[in-house]
Length: 319
Image (cartoon, rainbow, N blue to C red; front, side, top):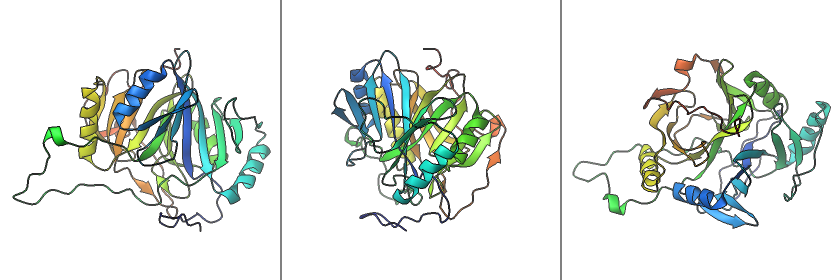
């Protein structure tokens, strides 16, 4: 077991090798100023870092994402964290799979190991603090008592500020191959899937229902990044917060089936999404979750508005 100051004790799943967190991701976009405006409006702490931007949550020094500038929006890499004692065994596993190890991309300092996944997405594994939660995150569903007003005046409402990156959904050309690669190489486990169209995977040392998901497309790409907030009210406020800044397009409010989280997606300037998410299912390190395979009508949402027709378009595939 490993203890981290100020956090509850982390329980490591004994005898199992696998990454524990989605530590960060990197992408490039055509205009950093546009990205800064979008993510700052979303409630993130956006910091200038060299020639790019870092995405942080307010009050935390953990960089959840980094953004550079390029000719078009493109997912560059995904970075996963693992415990120190698991680094060398994981490296040996990767090498035993015949996967070629690479140097870090130019401009990135790293003590980790780099390689491509089954679909050509660049992956880093590194020793890092566990950022996946060690218990189900708090969720506020309390009603106010009689004789008390439950909602503040709109002019006095506080800004929504997500607490952490919850997960990312990445496009892949072959969902079954994604399940095989990420379970066999990185030690993730399948939570649920819908045929060969989409799958959700969790960390074995305790994580949300998914820290990464994969959806079928002709090419790699980032569909959305999901950010945790503490209530349905925060999701609704976040949607209004973004609409007032000119970002009205999206999908929500609704509730997912697989993962069970409440959601609102805000479309970003490049055709992908940032999601406000609350109350997602949690899979403890002691739980052997029984993965299901569900038909499309039972895999996306329990309730909510009609899905936008272009919601599952991979704009990186057509760039």
